[in-house]
Length: 130
Image (cartoon, rainbow, N blue to C red):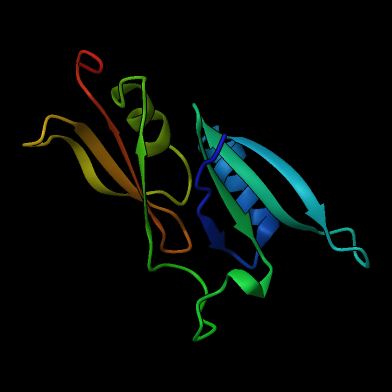
């Protein structure tokens, strides 16, 4: 099975793990550590079937070295997004960029910005997929 797993660069990986796992309640699987320090290098974050990577490896930083921001992750979920927005709203470090909105194309969406400047947009189709 092929898929796409976007990779975000965040230097403070321990803080990112806490934010995504403890704050947002996503499943976080750390699978790479620094051989010298034992510090996590990369993890996979999952919400429903959607996945993305977060790494402190400079390979994933922007070419200008600034690292974070500059990408929006669009999560199209099976579950209604209404159940996620309140949970995410109460997480420390979350900025609500767009509150619950019924879009002209039929999706119900909301968007947050994480502490590193990344925008995560969550959508579902009211009443399920056609």
